[in-house]
Length: 326
Ligand code: B4P
Image (cartoon, rainbow, N blue to C red; front, side, top):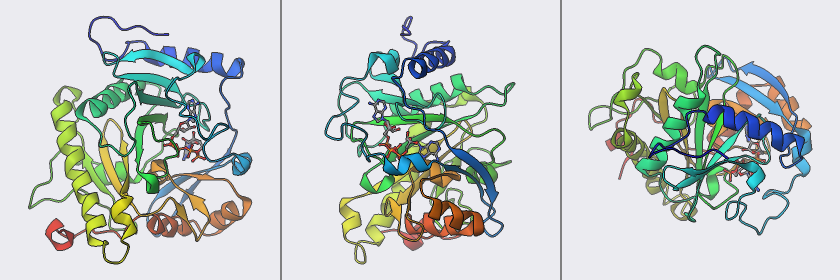
């Protein structure tokens, strides 16, 4: 288990620590990696790139793992613990016990916090620092942090956790495309966050500063708050038609070194394709567990866009916040 020196957030060699712990956990059976068939697709209509991971064996997995009533993060398994004290004991860095991509990690709060609680400036900064340490331009390795918040966001565990996973090699996510060539900015009454009008679902994106020295807790918190505020507006706006959304306000946060994105969610599962999405879906990474859904998607990739809309809200590109806000 890695130890921190001084008041550093994460050990310098955290990437090596993850690889070593992952290999050990796979070998000693503490981690259940699920094999999947992956297929890259492009939806010509929305312009979205997809990586479909087809894992039929997950269809029979119980939704909350093998012990549904237990909080797995109250006493995490030592065999999955990579760093016990992250950011002065605020978090633990754990390996995901049930990954479909290798070395998928979870930043879990040590004290119990609710997964519905907003991300704190320290949550955001710790995740950003982890991304900096894991990304490797020479090796073409990029990672994404995701936070599934609220019951309609795809989360299955209520103890606060931020996930970090490696993006597929050379994958261009929707957010990469809309941030290309754009400099960092904060939205104000004149400027809205970026949103691609070709996809059907609402998503709010901000480019992060190119230089990591310009990124700090305050900046990340301001970006996050301005994006979440727009997501909350949707629940307010839809209160008449879908009153249950007021109680179950769910959204996804996605962050790479280059951008941060918030997606308001209206449900976990799409009835159309019978598939569920967590945050990864809104970057174009789609986990499929049934042959029926897999076949339908291969035939008509655009069905994913429709399913993502079904689980989100309609795109508001081109509209000022005042036109859809309370
Ligand atoms: P949540 O935010 O609550 O839920 P989730 O990631 O959507 O995964 P879920 O559990 O609903 O499973 P799903 O079939 O969608 O995160 C909880 C996390 O804690 C999960 O990662 C879970 O594996 C992990 N966990 C549970 N018990 C644990 C324990 N005892 N110790 C350590 N970790 C524990 O997805 C199946 C798997 O594929 C999940 O790992 C999910 O994160 C991953 N996944 C889903 N879509 C993906 C995609 N497009 N690309 C790559 N990975 C993807």
